[in-house]
Length: 103
View 1 (cartoon, rainbow, N blue to C red):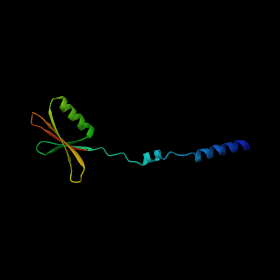
View 2: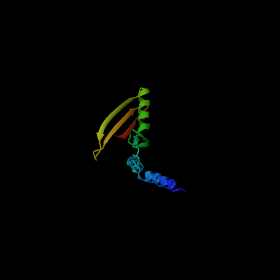
View 3: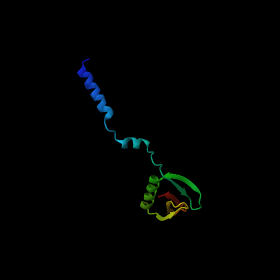
View 4: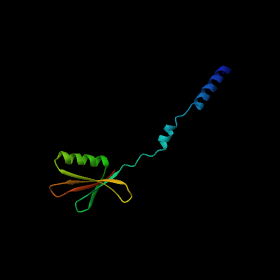
């Protein structure tokens, strides 16, 4: 191998090693994904009948609105100061759904 070819390889290698690196890509790898909010659903008697995601609960509330059901909504804070959204779907059959949604 000629000396000029070796010099070109060394120069190219140095350029790759010394090239600036975007630190945001490394930060993105080390940043954990946020945990999805868990929504708890209760009956009118206070029995927990299931859990869902915020997206699934929003879809359930939209279906209730489209079906003409009455939906009540409150915004409160828990004992630790975290905001909560409480919704109640009033079902004529008596099976109301109360959802506790972390805001």
